[in-house]
Image (tube, rainbow, N blue to C red; front, side):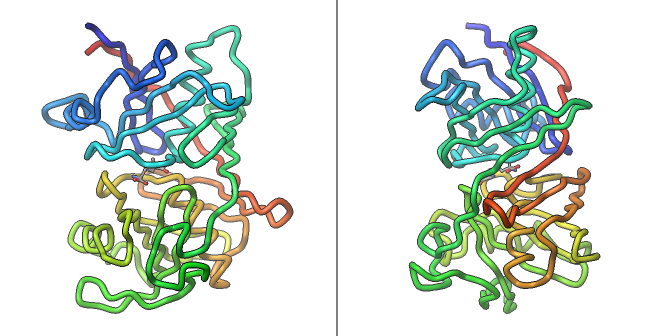
Length: 278
Ligand code: ZDP
């Protein structure tokens, strides 16, 4: 069977999008996803994303496989790409706002024009049991707590944006040997579901520089949920404003942790690159 796909990226965080509207189960297995994501033996991507029929009063359901075949709960850059993909599929019927069911609840992307999508990412979860991490008691928050990794003690803050994030503020993000130490955070026993890891340099309280080691995908050019988690961690530790620009290797995201409704709003681009058949 031939399967059509479309390649999109959000700040260089790239995904293979599959029109899965006719089926409730992904039409590509996680093993196939690993192969398709391979940059030498496949199409090349950080993940495969499926647009499935909606559930629980949502317009659509999003599922995603990381490039290692694992399935994350949510994907910030990916959901911007998904919104653009759905609007492209629907053509003249396209809406500007969609309710998307994910394993992290209903997430609402809004297409703003000029290639930008603003996403209501929901409320961050901060209790250790929710992240999950053992770095604090189950019903406590892990804010600026010590973590031993890569033969060093780091001060970390843990945030869930539906998926787990471990944030560390450093003097100079360029100096962090990501490839070497990323896996030691991802697989650290303090994170039973593994973790995404973000290193953040505070340039100004409203401007953060970030490099990321993603769970299941390694070094990527951007991570939407990670940028949201970074601003939440910045506010919790008094290092950043609630509204900030996050500069990633692939470009910038605008993040706001609304003090009114406690939800996190992320604005950034989503671009179609090409279409093909498998
Ligand atoms: O949580 C995870 O396993 C992540 N690798 C999922 C992907 C997150 C993503 N980079 C984002 O933008 O939030 C797509």
